[in-house]
Amino acid sequence: MRIRTVIVEDHDDIGRLVADRIAELIRQRNEAGRPTVLGLATGSTPIGVYRELIRRHTEEGLSFARVVTFNLDEYYPMDPKSIHSYHRFMWENLFSAIDIDPANVHIPRGDIPREAIAAEARAYEDAIRAAGGIDIQILGIGKTGHIGFNEPGSGIDSRTRVVTLDLVTRKDAAADFFGEENVPREAITMGIATILEAREILILATGEHKADIVHRAVEGEVDHEVPATFLQRHPNTTFYVDRAAAALLTPVATPWLVDEVQWTDSLAIRAVTWLAHRCGKAVLKLTQRDYAEYRLSSLPAHYGSVGALNGMVFNALGAKIRGRSKLPKGKRIICFSPHPDDDVISMGGILHKLVENGNEIIVAYMTSGNIAVFDHDVRRYVDFLHRMAREGYIAPAPAAGLIAKVTEFLAHKEPGQVDIPEVQDLKRMIRESEAVSGIEVLGLTASAARFLNLPFYRTGTVRKDPIGPADVAIVRALLEQVQPHLIFVAGDLSDPHGTHRMCKEAIDRAIEELYGKSARDENQSSGCPQRPEIWLYRGAWQEWPVTEATWLVPLSQEELRLKIQAIFKHQSQKDTAPFPGQDEREFWQRVEARNKGTAAELDRLGLAEYFAMEAYVVE
Image 1 (cartoon, rainbow, N blue to C red):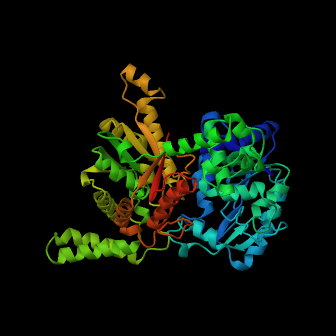
Image 2 (image 1 turned 120 degrees about the horizontal axis):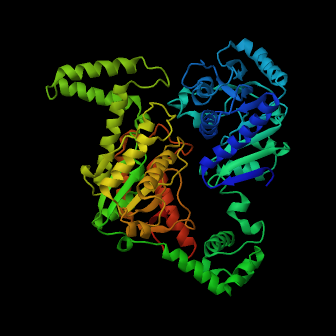
Image 3 (image 1 turned 45 degrees about the vertical axis):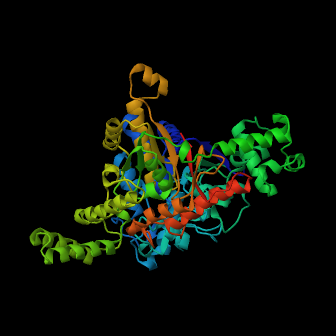
């Protein structure tokens, strides 16, 4: 690897590690009576750092009175009071909670006339030099490899300036602006040269969706089309990544190519599967020559022979397959769905099988998903209400008041403006009715749906509050009521909003509160509630690889068709979802490709041929 990289198991550890380094420098400088100059970034990844710094300020007395900050960038044009402004982001997520002098805060201005930008950019560079240069620069990384808003093609000598945003960058930002058409086309950003002059650079990345670009930045050649690769030329840069973002790095993906490894069955399965792909062969057809050619001779030697190794891997993969007869029967089950469609998108096939097996199933929708409903859907339902009232099916007076208020608001709504409570509620109810329709296709009834509407989500914006005690209490109450034997949890952490990750955090905390960290047999012997088995699903953004999956659940052609029908019931997300991520396909198309792809993967490895498959990991 060409950039020092720290890989952590839990993405929350990144915030603590980076905050450790920043706090250490601030304390050293404070004791010496010298200022600390920090370069700061916005976005979801640095928030963990800022929350940890706030905690250290409030609980440990870390003072920011001598800290000077320079932010990387700002959209242009942008009112600093806008909910999309990085000025507002920084004050809401850091500055207002610490003792920093406002005069020491520097953020590029997006509210100046165009003719003043060049002078403002020069003044920004002068201010950084006057402060003595940046001691620690925090960076995130975009899918194009941009750092700050230095898009592909940015020069290594570039300085603070106005830039045109790449189409991928604007698409990534579409969720924050409630539509790509509302994203500014330009931004003001520090240049590559400015960033590289920082004495230390800490770059952060989390999630599977960042794995490709992390791999390119850390192991690829320096390339103007991937600005993050310029960091390879910096003497003191550290990448902080979680296991998901590090998935494609050679020491993680194929450690046997880097150094001698201690072979375990799980590592051997990964290596043999990798080798089968490289050779284009089924597992049982791999030969000693194949292992030798790819520097894996030690692996069959460890297992005694090629035949023994191939057989072990073939049997291990086959043992993962669980048809309906091997799935739970007569159990209490909770499927936790972060949004009101993740259940059918990710596990619609197994849900139908579990219904057929006579299980008692609750589908718990953790958030309303209301920000992902287009305004035109609300107008359609308002028109329906108007017609119902006009024809006497509902009371005209209260309906008229609601219709007038919603119609007036939507008529004058500004791009990206937060919806009024009435509109938020209508959007919530739209998604709730779709969710019920979806599970009914799979054989469940409306009574199986529980709408938790966790408080952390109720901001009306893409940016959510941290998971708090109220969120955990709601999840815990459901667990206490149902006492499930098995729960399904979204492990699809590439959700672009981070909602899946936050929902999992709420579940993890509720489980820890309710069951503790004891093993199941200890809970039973002590009289504590039985800790449920946890199956993690994916599907909306990616699928579990067959080597990582604990169980692979086959789907027939009819079962996949039924699953897709359930997805179709989510009409507000059909055709064009408000926040589809980088994948242009509809969710049902992604599901069809991934489920068929998993089955095809097993077929290529020489196992039984199935039409489609869902994959699950037992946590």
